[in-house]
Image 1 (cartoon, rainbow, N blue to C red):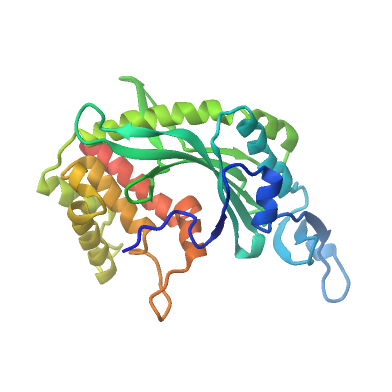
Image 2 (image 1 turned 135 degrees about the horizontal axis):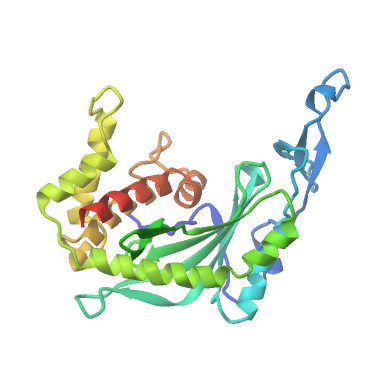
Length: 323
């Protein structure tokens, strides 16, 4: 199976030296959004006075229904935040940009310089690239989010994980891979504060490197592997192992042994986490059309913002508890 990049098929790949403005033009995201009143068929708006629609100004396409106090964050505002960080030399440049659901959500991806070398000094090095995703919604469903997205080079698995960091025996802090800006309140103040995201990103990636190195160094028994997989994919609420659950368990167990480039990480907790990631990111868990083709946009959305992240975070927690 071809190991697709997280955004492949759903976004436009970008030259590394483009500006945010150029990125928007190349990805056809150089449009703005406005809010408008909602009217009932009999020309009354009293029933819906607390709500507005968001509308793309270039073609009047309706993107969503939002509360009256909702504040639009334009693509230009959001993407421009990355421009300033790139100009400071703290990012290597943009990688891809695109949209979901006809523009109700948009995204742009940038890459941090260098690679992480997982397992260095212990065994064969497993390289992980460091990316930063910015995703903005125009339908009121999510805040503007900046997500730290490590990607394993050998297989393009995305590993944006919530990590538990133990400061002391009684103090465990959860480091999320996400910084958010709400579409309400003082948006400008929130965005200015979020420009310090690089400090959070570097701290997150430092902890991610420690976590990945720990998993790399821990070998799992066959019973541990089965137990972890069964806990991530438990029986249904009727205590039944359905065909879908059984297929998921079997797929991850096979990927633990036969996953992309697993020979260098064979038998490790790191290999098991990547088996879950390969399962979610590369089509095993996603619906296909009659010809067996994946919906690339749905896949990218799941990896960055949806079900794939949920499964990987659960797997991270269960594996961490086991090792």
